Length: 409
Ligand code: PMP
Image 1 (cartoon, rainbow, N blue to C red):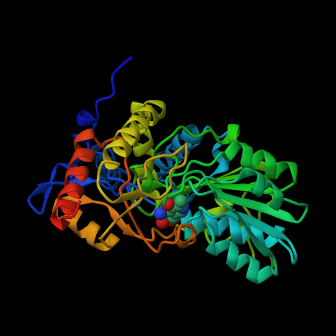
Image 2: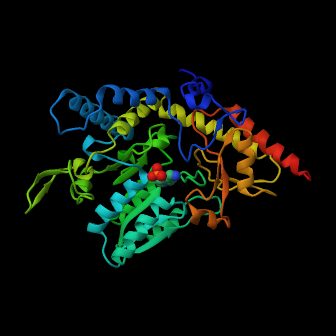
Image 3: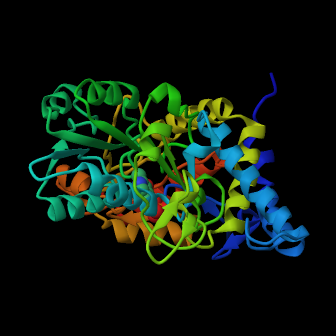
């Protein structure tokens, strides 16, 4: 078996070759967004240099090229998620838009007064607010599955929330604030036993582990292209055939119709019904190139390497005086949220930036889960497969330097 070499892989990412504040850039803000390999950048240029056209509508050579490239990207997404059909793959702008699409199009038809929607304490605001809006509109109730002190979902408590009024369960596969990996198959099976639909927010999982939507058996699976080494402005909603077929359109316009008269419009089937107007064609094609890139390495290989790197980072960071990890789930991916005695998270973020190290310091758009731990903010380094032990060592050295400067330890 070929040995994975993160140092070689890192050379595929031009942005990672630069210096920041006179120091080599160490990119540890992957949970916010990931960097793009040269192949994705080249694919975008190629599209605009040779293929750019609107899709479907015009019968000429470039329209055929752009349509082929766009539909080939859809097939790459299908393969990546192991979905049964390209009809199940809807392109949207990102995870946020995807969840809003489901909350509005599916939710408006299926949620009624007195119904219940279940989320978890781990959710990103993108998987809370659209459901709150739907609940407010419909007179439905939002219920929240709790986590334990390590940041793990308490399955027994979650199951107690399920009842015949539960319409949908919307849960993240990986927490962007703590890194907790949730048991999505069990969550889905339990919801289905109570007749509820399931949406999995895969924004933080797809770049770190293989995903198989048929094995999870979820009704919807959502992710953003920019978090899996693809461009911004492109994301995906996977929906089961039967679920999408029974879902009304969200936005109206061109592309999503079969026939329009002033009296009546007949809609297309999925996925076109959910892709009104000119979509983000180039970025969908770029996402396809990103998925080709990660698949050329292999998601199993990536998951194994990142697991080892996470263990290495956890052990090294434990040696920093005054550092407390927030979120210590038995199963974690990528994220190393922490607070540091004697420093605000902002100060730590700035001190790391001076060393060329990029991390996020703040609430990570997940205020409820941080407040569950009595915090308003953490420092959040987050790993990707192009990070190395040397990156982790640079982070730890910078944290030790900051603490040494404080004295007293
Ligand atoms: N869900 C999770 C778990 C996330 O981490 C994010 C992005 N931080 C989102 C949803 C929203 O993704 P986007 O901003 O790309 O729409």
